[in-house]
Image (cartoon, rainbow, N blue to C red):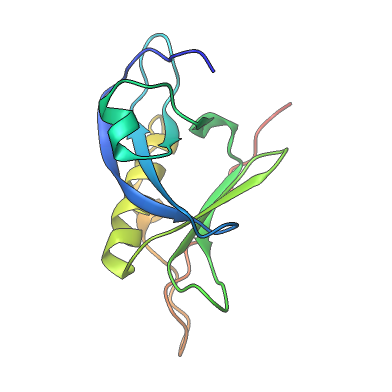
Length: 138
């Protein structure tokens, strides 16, 4: 994969991919003139620091839904849905999940950001559930 021009790093750190539960180094980048806002991941922090190309990147504008996923085994899952796939990442704790989800949603909704998009819907006797669906045109 070719290297991608930079963009301000909004958030970075280790998260796990739900599918494999392997730890990866994730980087959330702001939009630039050359690239949309995106979530990248690297095999390790060392590869990121060395300037290697990301293992994969997901432009946030390709996501029609970004939400907290309720999972029986993992408590802190963020799901990003595109037409082709879903990427699920696992945070270590509730605070980390909220920080990542808030940052991702702010970039995803940068043109019409509203605080109500960042607040969870609370149901009695259930953990926080974030509901965000964005309709896009083909």
